[in-house]
Length: 266
Image (cartoon, rainbow, N blue to C red; front, side):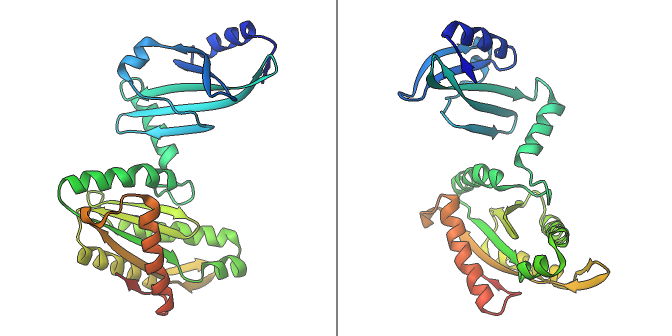
């Protein structure tokens, strides 16, 4: 998007301001705001800082933040147009709920997605540690999943992912925690305030449910298994990031594979 001068840019910005209460024009070279419009009412109810990103979408319990960043040129000067809008329950509850679901849900499995993990997991750790309780995690993937895609096609692979995800979803109570698709055929369950023994029992229950399920693919019945790694984190563990937790769980999952798969390593 190119603008011959700043007056032309300002005219466009004021049009966009009808839809985005906060508009920034950034200078790419010096990371400075060259021009901005901020709706005062929006800022009073949303006193948040704004970070320079290509695009971000954030979700809180009663609010969603939509932040879009667009490269532009003004008088041949490379800049970036940042558009920010907040949606709250009081604005349009149905619309906000839809935006929340869209942003944090994996479209294939209907479990939570990686974005949800990255935002929710650190918050659950902090909250649960403040209550003096641990957080347990279950990490799993489907044994020989690549062979399913190779032999039966990716449509069959998608079917298997949806069916396995359904088992994960129905194996935990909402009040106990949440399940998400971390990526590919890998799934993560977060169980705040549940101890290690309980988490291992849940993992074995899921493992057995998958083992007993008949998966119908192109008229053929397949029996599948999953491997699991279980880890419980305490405040004294010194672990607080998603990458640290996944690193530990990944090593345990690898040990489960080496044991012969279809097993739980806690």
